[in-house]
Amino acid sequence: MEGESVLKLRSSEWFENENAELTFQHRSAMRAMGHNPESFVGKPIIGIFNAWNDFNSCNYPHKELVEFVKRGVLLAGGYPIEMHTISTPADFMKPSDLMYRNLLSMDIEESIRSQPIDGVVLLCECDKTVPGQLMGAASCDLPALQLAAGHRSSGSFRGKTVNYGTDLWKYSDDYKAGLLSDDDWKELEQSISCSLGGCPVMGTASTMKSLSEMLGMMLPGTSSIPATHAARKHAAEATGRRIVEMVRDNLTPSKLMTEEAFHNAIKLVAALGGSTNAAIHLTAIAGRLGIRIPIERYEELTEGIPLIVNLQPSGSHSMDDFFKAGGLRKVIRNLLPKLDADCLSCTGETIGDTYGSDMPAYADESEVISTLDAPFKQKSGLAILKGNLAPNGAVIKKSAVSPKLFRHRGQAVVFDGYEDMLARIDSDDLEVTEDNVLVLKNCGPVAMGMPEWGSIPIPAKLLRQGVRDMVRISDARMSGTSYGAVILHVAPEAIIGGPLAIVQTGDWIEMDLDRSTLRLDLDDAEIEARLKKWTRPEPQHKRGYPRLFAEHALQAPEGCDLDILRPNSKEEAKFVPPIVGRG
Ligand SMILES: CC(C)(O)[C@@H](O)C(=O)O
Image (cartoon, rainbow, N blue to C red; front, side, top):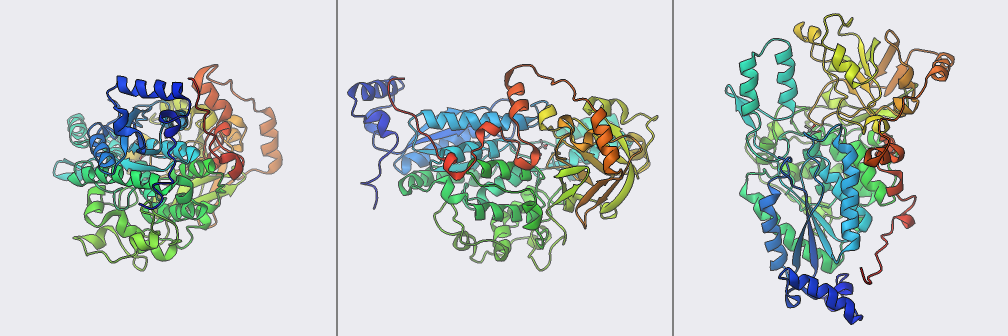
């Protein structure tokens, strides 16, 4: 292969170093584990970063899939080395797995930086493993590819298809409204989640996998394969093969994840009705490459991009249906006229060439994936709301809002924090009607690591009256599987003195999605006076990683990365390799 002879592998500094003592030390350490230098010296060493653990039902399939990746690496003439990283199971990590996304990204970055690795495979699935790995890989800029574990199968409850995530929230409302018995509820728990893999809807995991493929960091067509399908294993092997070629071609993340590629990804979020969390993660990944995405871009770029998939939570189908209808490949093909087709995919071809060719028709396709001319909803994407309540912006997913709430004016019912909300939300004494605006404070990145607490439950007494959507506002995030008129990521957050901190029950709030505004109906002087009286609550954590996060986390419009991890320019983004000497 042309270029092979000139390829200087990074790992050769460890294994073919002019300093005989170093070469000896590194080779003998490898021998101790049964790795014969004859088998790996001079070959691209592929670090396979595995983020499965016994709590992570999404990433768990990687325990087995990794063997197929290794096979692919060996078949292509590379040498695989498996490594474990922090895992971020969204179901279990409290208060929020977002905080640990940054820790995971540091784990990846420093593991790559410090060890003899030439190329990287990142095994991902659960929400934060996808962006966390991309952030780490972007900071190192060695050739890297992601492989997802795939989504879990839909379940069946009393003859109806049920999807973990979105249907959990839906049935939970029904349970609280008295429409499901305790026995029904137990049966649902047993039937909703019946295989391993990510959420089977367009939640954060599916959104982020799709974006990884759009950014060129996952093999084309692989992001929507179900976890249980044999094609996942083929994708794993193909990923192993391809990364070896990418090392030989020096196809690095910065060549794939360009500013234009991020713009394509933002457009894709709108076409998919993807998770609001994408606005935080894309900004954080781009930030590692010295690319700034102003929050307004998320709205500007998606003007005129309709919803072309009919998947929960914005529509009705599951990821299994999506796969059968042609999956992301078909969506990107249909969206191509709106994309920059010159961006590269990880095949080394442009996305125009990779996704442009005709695809066969699939069963039920038009019910699940549409064309730009006949979309499921005209209004999609994220609205970035601005106004005196969110001077630096707030986010809402347009495709998930009940149409009657697109413009709304109502009086606030305020909760000072999550515990206050839990204590009062279902009380019959809570004075609330469906016209009120529920406001939750002190759940932002600095306060709490920004948990998915933003889809404040509809008060039980309103559920019993049949209410299923209300305007809700917070500085928290929400699950990608949730839906409703939920305004999130209010910035600046309350705990650092954002105007959200001084909202009181009874204040009037106006939201207008057509004008992208969010206004607290108080004059500036009153807001100022209330802010003067406001005192900042004591930080919760006095030590450890939570303190580090609280002291360094950027606000939501900046991607919630730690300020010390984000370079100030492309120049600063350059990877600094270690000096290879005695350890
Ligand atoms: C369902 C979860 C855990 O909230 C997440 O997967 C998401 O989609 O945001």
